Image (cartoon, rainbow over all chains, first blue to last red; front, side, top):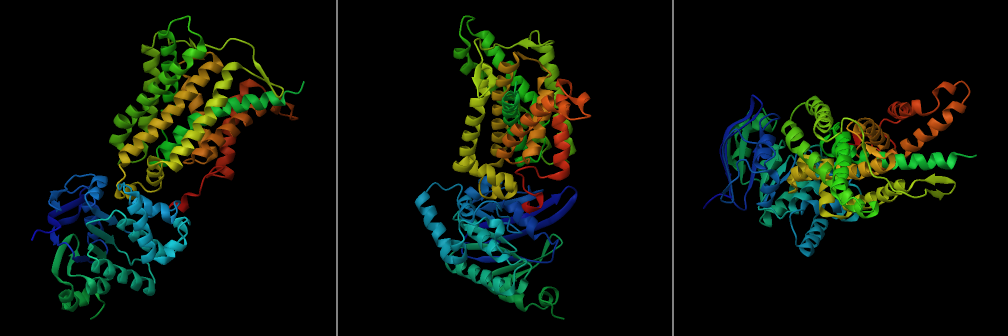
Length: 238
Length: 309
């Protein structure tokens, strides 16, 4: 079986500083794969490179059978790779509905787009109630729901979520994690970057631990959750 | 004689021109955070483009018939120069520190002036621009020249078209998204390079329209005309709130009217007699700019930058 996403020996640098120093991993269709690690480990850099916002220094990215190296971000979305960026990055002066419509920017099927927007409103009823409200006025949790909804609007083959739980209350975080589980049960393939290792590993099929630009440990979510070194470093146990 | 209606009309005509040019500053700034200081020259070359078309037409042709073609010629030349500037001067500096494109813009501005001075026939002095013959109109006590009607009609039409484009079309929506967050717009599948070109092109087109208006009003075009008009239009863009298209037009009109009124009436203020009249007219725009920067730095319709995060 070929992987939906295959990353081989990927290296990314900001000027002379190499943030990602040769990582390899795969994501199979239908899986949830997580990258965990501390700040500065290179997780966000990896996602930004996969979606084309950064150019790799070396390595190969194969998505859905096609090599992506050097492809512009707008072309990568077209191929089915959606990215919900760190810090949510909504269009603050546009309404919830307009943000969702922009998520479907490349689609032409307006009735299906409308149906998908309704589906997002079912998934997150609060968004439906406030559809005409500027997204900049939403709470952090609501913004995260909208960011995820917006990324789903392109009907991606692979959804990349960067720190969806960042800055959220425990209840809101619970809600976001439940949503990821639900998306997964609907067959969405997800690449999840998280600082909350416990939550991420609990729902991931596979996990990779990153440290200063390298993958230092890989395994199933369950294995990593019970791994001694992971527990010490990321789950706050000694 | 009460000259207030006349001064208001003068201000409005001037302001509509400032506003049309200001759109170019504000759109480009809104999307790439660049003050395109060559925009005044993009306006200037439009005037020469329109003049060239006029000179190429049969000499007996009435100006009314020539005007649409001149307008197309002016817009075309401005857009070509504006888009070329983006492609060859600014785009290679996209990731560079902000000072680099700014200096490039100033250099480009000088280069364009000198190119017209050197290579456009007889452009070392002002070239005569055709004017409408016939009596002026009397509008509510103000005398409005026939040529000035052009900008009074063109500016509102341009604004309506732009408003429709930005809020109702797919590309307009994409432009708003790109202005608010360029990276994320790209993640939505928007080709942000194309949106940037589009912003330059629309701004240049409006500058081309303004250049025709300027030619019709003053009866001439010359290689230096973009400098002071560009500075005033930039002031209008800041006054209205840079990044906001309606603010640019509002800022232009406020600036034009303020300039006309100050030129006419400042000398009546006790102790200010020596500051009256046309010699001081360019000063008022910048006095206004300083006041805005002190009292309302975000401009009349601008938003505080902190809201953008």
